[in-house]
Length: 489
View (tube, rainbow, N blue to C red):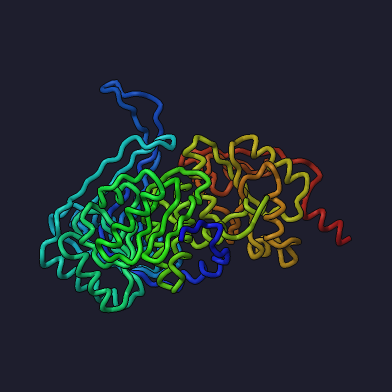
């Protein structure tokens, strides 16, 4: 039977909240993903190549490490078993994995091994080049035995196992097969993100998640239609005894094929910006859902939604539990502009990559009046996209006294979001917006002219990363405090 998304149940919101109870083991090739961002404005006189003026660098766990990042973003607990080299990249990767809450890391060190590191150079939202450092040889026998022993102990303490195979050596030889066999004895499900053409190494896995190209290479079949994709997936089921094949099909969504049914999920992405790591998101979401006994077809749908979320973000991104809930919640109109600080930071990154200037201003915005509107219109005129930070109710009470705010934070955010000059609204608990400024990194920070540039909180930080601080004129005769005093009088 072939089903599309429209035939599936829509009550996934409650199931998403259960993901925080999941515990998942990830075994595979962890790597270090490095992003070097900058600007290109000239060509080198030494060779016909662009000169990248570096503005910032970001490093994060990739490969199996990125699967773990996605699990943690969903609220799940994760154990990671992998191998790194005794080099700086290995040390950096170990530190990045270790600082994540909810992760039990087992990163074994192999002397003389080169830790896999992918460095992407990016300008104006475009990848200029990717430089890889890696070693793909199989693990020495003793190290492989130690890895398997640790993985088996972790498998017994978790609900689902992911084998994240990037063909860098961790799952070479019979390692994958031994882990699958052990999982069957323990009654644990195994999901494999496969690589290569020899899927006999994954014999008996519960689910494999090839993309369209990988499926074609593994079966030797031409995949020119939906029917041919299903036929190729069925070949894998018959050859290797898999419980299911979930085929990721980029802009065409996903197809789930089991011996009993076929389901197609149309792509959920509104806009594709960066596909890096989308496969990691799929396996992580699928595993977390299965770990809390969400049915396979619903787990696949959640994975499809999560993939649609991350391809609309910049770099190797993750889909958070809040992202999934936001997607599934029927919020329309202005309220969709009210987001978390993390979502605002991701939007700012995406806008900057497209060449937009991102502005930021903040305040309590209690009882919105013409002075506020005038300020926000000035802010928007100075930038391409405007993010407004508002103090939470607790923060307003600390700043203004126990009788404030006059309106609760949800109401204040909704009113601000309804303004055409405002693109996003986010809330902060501190007395100042300094911490969220560091996350959003706006190109422009605007405050009222009753401040000086030196007095603006976060002004120095914004200037340090190349941004600008501007002061907007105030509209005389308008004040929330004065308005409230008149109402009380």
